[in-house]
Length: 278
Image (cartoon, rainbow, N blue to C red; front, side):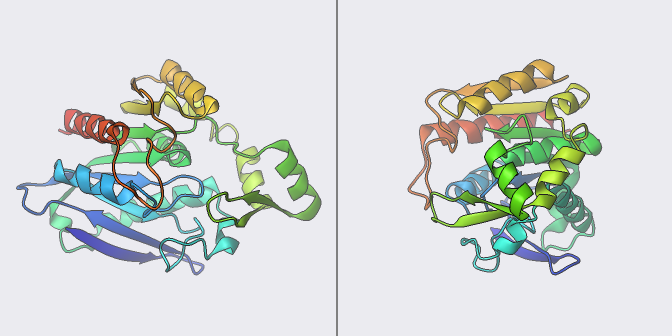
């Protein structure tokens, strides 16, 4: 069963989300917040399928769009680029805090089935960084799963930085949509001014919660190397390599079916959550 919701925030911002839950299961269910990555969204490719499969394994999964991810009411198109241009880590962490607070008010038809004492975060790519940063500051989070996640928050090369410094805005090409996606100075400032707070390697070294790093060995080299860095630094981590897997576990958008690599990521994630649920 899927329950869709809209959470209005201040400043004309909205979090749109979906709760996947198996209502036939008895008892309360652990809750997993699914954080998409840079140029990602809750309905990208395999994400709805992955949420469905995790729900079938007894986990309540909440997929959502960060309020400034650039995808509006269309749910699948970047039709709010003015919001994408100012989407900071600070904004995404505030979204997570707002979403968790809202869920505690039991707003959904099956809210009584959600065990928020068993709260987990899953992030893909940049979303893995968000999940780590939020958990590091919120000890009520029971565990974090990072799917091909970042180990360093600065995603912007020197050329883009110079363009933004000169013009107040720079552009990143989206190869899928062919859009030129804007990035404004506030995004760069957020990264630079919070370098210590957003140091993911340092944060996992002091984060007591268990961390599962699910990493494709055919992903971008910086992410493969970053997974090793996070694992080496973390207090309590497991690094699970998926052989032959690229950045999206060999799936595409629009979704064209599952892959053995995605199925492995789903299974190891469900096992981790079952293991660490009380």
